[in-house]
Image (cartoon, rainbow, N blue to C red; front, top):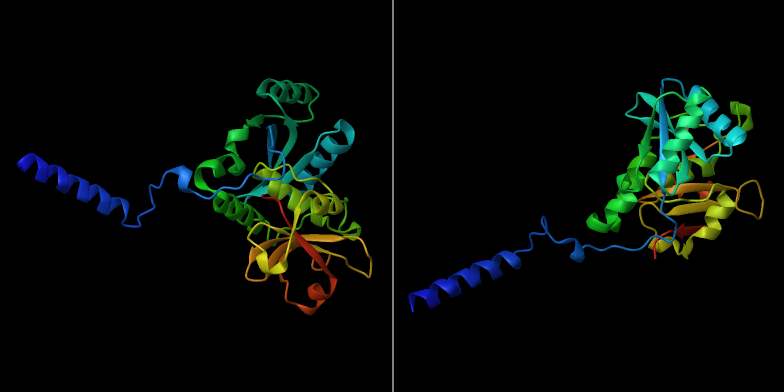
Length: 254
């Protein structure tokens, strides 16, 4: 009888803990995940610690134009810029390419970024909201930064799709380069169903095609690379200007 009572007390304790609503240690199978529509990034090469964004931009341009490598640069800890490039299926292939570039004195020391290092890989454990928040946090790091992907001078304009591509690729999702390609790659969603990390598309200056893109962070706000002000900035989707040129939104999750 005592053994039966003890067993019932133990079972009651287990059930009370299981039903208490504490999800801190909830198994990953209970976390909401959605398979991304985009391909995941493979192994990439990371180099540099530039204090000046122009130096990082010049290396990015050289790797892209002279060596045919998809390259981007980004701010680390509000202190310096790094360059990340390539998309290799194996670590050996990435290392081989990096060593060849180092021999030609195009790069110096390098680091190989593994697919499992990205937020896109971790979302299998922590859920889609984790990845969406990571996208927003990455974009927020760029606010106030003067960024030029499309040219070598401020007069040539800021490349908005370069920002969104960089944010996605830094988190392990291989978003295409141009805003029109990004628009086609995503799944259309209504404005009322927007979630953090989705992309917003606009048609500026009276054009019919997509000409601008920004990353939605919630509460009608988005981050984008604007030619006005010369920096990455935060704006509101409810403003008259963006209301009038809004084309649609895309998500990259099923």
